[in-house]
Length: 114
Image 1 (cartoon, rainbow, N blue to C red):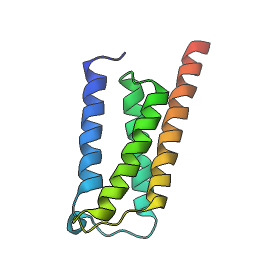
Image 2 (image 1 turned 180 degrees about the vertical axis):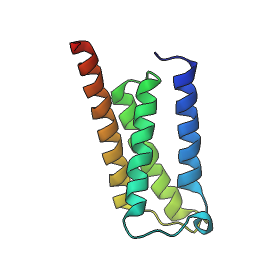
Image 3 (image 1 turned 30 degrees about the horizontal axis):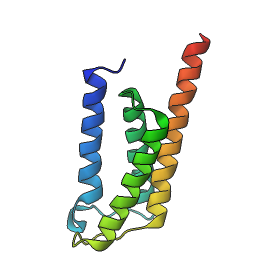
Image 4 (image 1 turned 60 degrees about the vertical axis):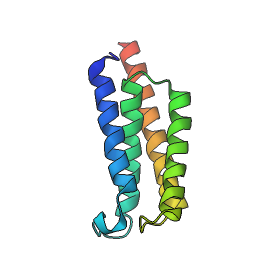
């Protein structure tokens, strides 16, 4: 279950997250208000699911992803990327992490019940 494919998916998901979170502001397409929160939620949901599939335990994974989200917001706020850091973006990250970890746990319980 936690083979090369799952680790590869996690690696690609991390690379995508780096591109999304640390792209210069000029490379970020304009979108209606709130869409960026959905992007954050979906990105961290994908990171949580990919991490669990790769065999990372939920506690350390959740802590690492929360820290990653916080650091990304600080970097966006303080770097010359022409981006802005946002607590609400980090809260969307946290929501994605929580949904991903809960969904994985629910799936595990369902598999064990059958």
